[in-house]
Image 1 (cartoon, rainbow over the protein chains, first blue to last red):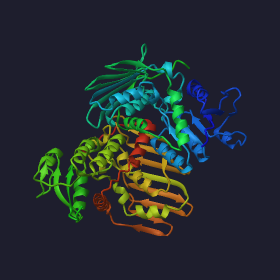
Image 2 (image 1 turned 180 degrees about the vertical axis):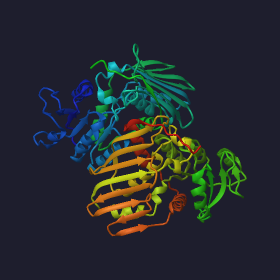
Image 3 (image 1 turned 90 degrees about the vertical axis):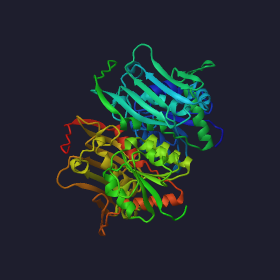
Image 4 (image 1 turned 180 degrees about the horizontal axis):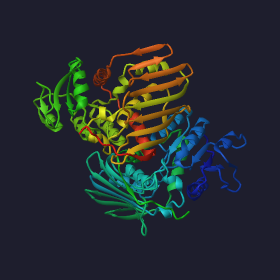
Amino acid sequence: MSDAPIRIAVAGMGKIAHDQHLPAIAGDPGFTLAATVSRSDARVAGVPHYRSLQALLDDDGVAVDAVALCTPPQVRYDFAAMALARGRHVFLEKPPGATLAEVAALERHAADAGVTLFASWHSRFAAGVEPARAWLADRRIDRVSVVWREDVRVWHPGQAWIWEPGGLGVFDPGINALSIATRILPRPFFLQSATMAMPANRAAPIAADLHFRDTAGAPIEMDLDWRQTGPQSWDIIVETDAGTCRLSGGGATLTVPGGTERGEDREYAGLYARFGALVRAGASDVDTSPLRLVADAFLRARREIVEPFEDQSR
Amino acid sequence: MSDAPIRIAVAGMGKIAHDQHLPAIAGDPGFTLAATVSRSDARVAGVPHYRSLQALLDDDGVAVDAVALCTPPQVRYDFAAMALARGRHVFLEKPPGATLAEVAALERHAADAGVTLFASWHSRFAAGVEPARAWLADRRIDRVSVVWREDVRVWHPGQAWIWEPGGLGVFDPGINALSIATRILPRPFFLQSATMAMPANRAAPIAADLHFRDTAGAPIEMDLDWRQTGPQSWDIIVETDAGTCRLSGGGATLTVPGGTERGEDREYAGLYARFGALVRAGASDVDTSPLRLVADAFLRARREIVEPFEDQSR
C-alpha cells in the first residue's frame, strides 16, 4: 500500500463519533475523512453523507478504503460484514460486537477478504497503561482491586440501547477496565463468582461485584457501579512485592512507589495510529478477551433484582 | 509414547462416570483404569481410590498418565490445572469449564506442560453426526430447526448444582445440540436474539428460545425446554436445496432423502478413541465454540421469570 492517506468513512454519527473519532481523524495525517453514514442528518460540512452504508458502498463516485463503525453493538455485525466483503478495512468501536461468535465470524471474513479488522479498546491507549504494563511485567502480583463507579445519568443520558439485551449495562464502562486489566497484568485471569444488580425494569445490570483470580492464584476484585453521584472512580490498584501500582482516571494517571505521572488524553489518536499501522502492515488485531470476560460474567453471575432505573434525562 | 495402555484416573464419581466413563475405559484396550477420585466412597473393586486429586498425585505408589474429569464444571479448573501442571493429560467432560477464560487458560497450561488437553463433546460422536456433516458439506442451507425438549426430573434428578450460577440449566443438554450443530453445519453461526425462561427460585434457565443465523444468512431456530413430559425430542432438522436432513435421538438416527440410518450408541467409546489418539500424537483438542454460543446467549438473552421449579425427586 502507498503512503497516501487512508480514506475513511465514519458510520454511526452519535456522541462517540463526534467527540472522539472525527477529531482523531482530523488530527492524523495518515487518514482523510471520505464520508459519513447515519440515518440522521448529523454530518460534517463538505464531506459526502449517506443514509446507509450500502448507499455509500454502491456509490462509485466516492473512494473509501476503510470504515469506522460507531453504531451500537447490536447492529455492528451486518455493517462490518458488508464492508469487509466489499474489500474495506474495518475499525470496530468497543465492544466489537454483541456476541463473541459474531466477532469470530468477522475475523474469518477479514482474513478471507485480505483486509484489516481492528477491534479497538480505547482505554488501552490511555497514557498510564503501557508504563503500568512495563512496571508490572516482572512483579509478583498479590492482589488487584478494580473500582469503576460512575453516574450513568451523566455519561449515558437517554441511551436506551445500552439497557437492552445485547447492550452491556454497567459493563459498557466496565469493559474499559477489563481492557486495561487484560493488558497490564502479566497473567491471564478468569471469573470465580459474581453478582449483578438488575434494575426491575431493565435487561442489563446497573452494578456488579466480580471476583476473578489469575493463573497464579492472585485475587482480582472488581466493583462496577453506575449509581455513583459526586466524585467518580475509574481506578485499578495492583498490590505487588515492590509496592502498589495505581492507575487512576481511567488509565490516565499512573502512581508507583517512584512517583506519579499524568499524561494528556491521546486515546483515540493512539487508536487511529494503531489502525493505520495495521492497514499498512496488512494485519488484523482482534482481541476479544475483554468481551469474553463480560460474557463469562453474564454466564456465571448470580442476579439480584434492584429498584427500577428511570432515566430522567428524557 | 509407547503403545502401552494409557493409565487413567477418573475424578468425580457421579452418574456420568459410572454410566459412561468406566464402561468406555473398560472396553478400550488403549486405556487401563489406574485409580478413582471422589470425596464419597463410590469406587471400583480392585482399583485404588483417593479422596482428592492431590492425594492421588502425591502418591508415588500409583502411576497415572491421564485424568478424566467428571466433576461439575464449577470446580473443574482447579483439578485440571493441577493435573496439567504435574504432567498429566486431561480429558474434560462437557462443558469444559464454568467460563470461557478459564478454558483458554487451561489450553495455555497444557501447551506449557507439553501434555494433551481434550475438551470433549460426547454428542459429536453420536452415530449420525459424521454422516450428516458429510451430507451437508456441499448443500445450500435454507433453514435449521433444533428442538431439544426433555424432562429435567427424569434426566437430572436431585442435581442441585445444575441450577446454580455456573451450572447451565437447560443449556446443559442444549450444549449437546450446539456441539452437533457446530460440527455438521458448513458455516459458522451466531446469535441474533434469545429469550430465557428463568424459574423464580433458580439461577439458571429452564427453557430458552434462540434465534441464530449463519454467515450466509440462513436462520437457525433453537427450542430448548426442560419441562417436556411424555415423548422427548432431541432433533436437528436442516432444510437444504437437496431436501431435508433430520438428525434425531440426539444424533443417533440420520434421515436424508435417500433413507434412514440408525447406529448403535458408541459416543463415549468414540471419545476415548479420540483422546487416546490425541495423547499418542502429542496434540490437544479444545474447541470451545459450543460454550461460546451459550455464553453469548446468557450475554444477550431477554430473561422472563416463570413459575418456580421444585425438584420432587429429593
